[in-house]
Amino acid sequence: MQKLPLKLEKRLEKRKNDNSLRSLPLAIEGVDFFSNDYLGFSSSEVIRKRTSEIMETQAYQNGATGSRLLSGNHPLFSKAEKMIAEFHDAESALIFNSGYDANLGFFSAVPQKGDFIFYDELSHASIRDGIRMSLAKSYKFIHNNLQDLEAKLRKFDHSSNDFQVYIVTESVFSMDGDIPDLEGITRLSKQYNALLVIDEAHATGVFGENGVGLVQQLGLEENVFARIQTFGKAIGSHGAAILGSNKLKNYLINFARSFIYTTALPPHTLATIIAVYENLQWDVENITKLRANINFFKAELGKNVLAKRFTNSDSAIQSCIVSGNDRVKSIALQLQENGFVVKPILSPTVPVGQERLRFCLHAYNSKQEISEVLERLANFVQKSN
Image (cartoon, rainbow, N blue to C red; front, side):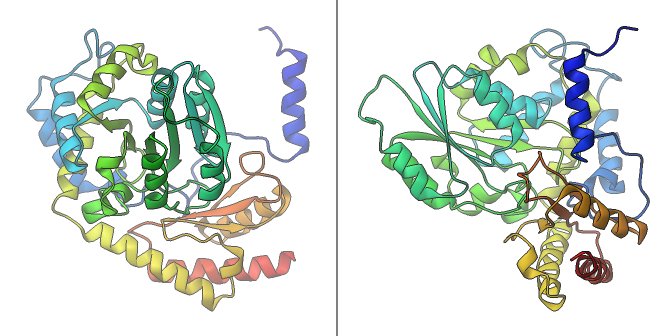
């Protein structure tokens, strides 16, 4: 077997020296405060049974057999896309294999040469990777800072029809769990004739009536050009959909390479997505429990004198800043040894000095578990000072 090139070995060695080398973890026993399965749907018996019922109505098929433009456009795609579009009050939905594929496909295909993209500096890696593949010029604005965004927008002649401006943000950010001023961003998009793109990955199933997301909770869906809804978080499955107009859907089918040149999702995954969306329309118990746990967690932060260490978040993501890769990994290990699985987020995933413990809350976490993990955290943090 040929050796890894020396320059690549050096990159790995630097990661080791920085204590930021990634590796695939083994399963860890303990209370789940780390997964994105906010509503517990990935292991729901109700969802499993309904998925099986849906599959029994279809001709047996394990795999997709090809891309959707060839042999992989299973009938369940049209059913799922119709349901998703109606649930999210959109004209159409187009399913991609993942949120990463959706963002890569959208940003590499839609903004054109001569266009401009303004994106939040903390946008997900999939958004930034898609933007890098675009021929449009891109500019980041300070995280959740509308003044900085407007200052950058002002520099362009928005009366011209020679280019299109896109504003890109997330409704809930994955590392801080914070929420931008979506109403303010919408006003700016109208004022400067920009098309608004919002990634709802961590808002779907958590915010809005029946978990429709923050855009609909605020009544902004008519003002958003494209929404990205992913199914690997609260939906508990896999894949994603881009919501928008019928013309946008048709354009993506023709030009989004991450859609065109990949094998489609298998039918079983589509059946799971359908089962979850059916469930969201009538069963709000899990969403209610999740929201109650978020509120309880925040109240417990005050009791344990931890509030100042945490980012300001009303979402299922609660992040405790613990500077230094060594220190944050040590505290995470101590929590795991005490039966609580909390994962450290290291630099360079987050900036140096902003390393953190990322707590993901779920409908199935008990109040006792929340109280105990925060008591342990307060003790470990105090000892590490």
